[in-house]
Amino acid sequence: MIRHRAESGIRVLILLAIGTMAGAAAFTHVHDLTVAHGQPDWIGWANAVAVELMAIYLGLEIRARRRDGRPVGLVGVLLIAFALLSLAAQVAEAEPSVWGWIVAAVPSLAFLALVKVVLSSAPTTAPAPEPDQPQGDWYDEPQPVESAPPAPVMPPASVPVLPPAGVVPSNRPQVVGIIR
Image (cartoon, rainbow, N blue to C red):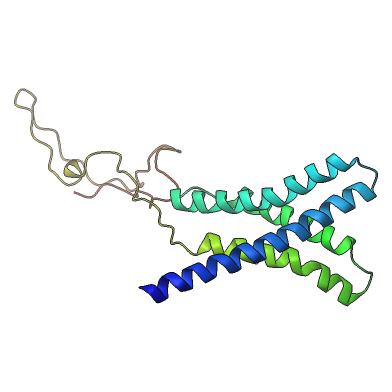
């Protein structure tokens, strides 16, 4: 128990140290690049906040969407776009050499890796989809109505019975027919 707490504490300290240093470097590079291209100082900081925090927010949004069983496609594309913006700012501020670009990319890549590890450390499970009708009604035989004559038995249809578009959630298997 004590070992587990100590290990967790060390992990949090490492997380904070890497996050702080990588974030500071990434913020600074985005700020400096913005200012170098004619924008005022405050816009440089606004761009840095927007680019770097957007990547973190989008990672959290992907996690929440996966947990809820919602699609993550557009959010994933946006995350990649903001990560590439951050990485481009790192490389643009570097010495124009392969090693200069690699070294300049380290803070952004470390920050993104850290976000990915933290966001993927807890399991995310989608809740079970709710049925369209109570489960007890799924396989029960219909009760005959006393005043109505019995319905004729119809042969099975050759065309599968599908629900109207949008009625069945996309994460639920499609109903092909009714089996009784």
